[in-house]
Amino acid sequence: MNISFFKYQGTGNDFVMIDNRAKTFPKEKTDIFSQICDRHFGIGADGIILIEDDENYDFEMIYYNADGSQTFCGNGARCAVAFAKTLNMIEDKTNFIAVDGEHFASIKDSIVSLQMIDVNDIKVNENSVFAYTGTQHHVELVDNLDDYPVFNEGRKIRYSYENPGSNVNFVQQIDNQTFRVRTYEKGVEDETLACGTGVTAVAIAMHKINRTKSNIISLPVEGGNLEVTFTEEKGIYKNVFLKGPAKFVFEGSINI
Ligand SMILES: N[C@@H](CCC[C@H](N)C(=O)O)C(=O)O
Image (cartoon, rainbow, N blue to C red):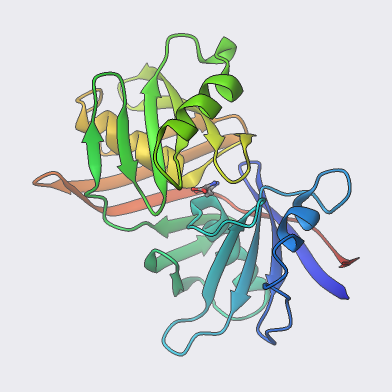
């Protein structure tokens, strides 16, 4: 079967985007996701996104990690918005639906600002914070992020959470509103260059534990820079926005 695809990246978190409005993509083939995402034998990507029509929203975004598991993806959603615009499904603003609920987003000059779900599932532990931002995130401050063994430590922590586990974000504070982040992603089972739901969890966690009083947080990641803004009311984080670049890389077709 020949499948047309478009490759996008958001701060180096990379995705294969498929226009599945005709519903021809064989989602039921469980190994298709790992085949396509394989960086040697496939196209290579952290995940795959299907764009489908929806009765009540501009589109539905369906996200699969490289191993075929399904969840929400912040950078993937920002890329989905850029892709939907090139498909002429939206103009500069959109309401779309994903596995964690509805999202609003706007796009200007390849910068996508994405509204995330309200965040109220936050647990402060002795040396870490857990936050659910559309998917599971462990957040931990470390001293020297450059030399930190993100893969080995991330993998251990990822499996210390009950199924489906957790993504793991290691953080270094740079100033009173800037936090550098490196993330081990479950479902990719590796460090990625950026994680949108991850930096959202970091921004909220750092506010929650009083590392910052700002509600505009800059988050340098391995693949660029992201920004998270929010309001906080009685411990619930609302109006949470993730902002950063989302770019087309190349298009093609693959025989699978
Ligand atoms: N990179 C993503 C998160 C993708 C999902 C994650 N691997 C999981 O399984 O929870 C992002 O930008 O949010």
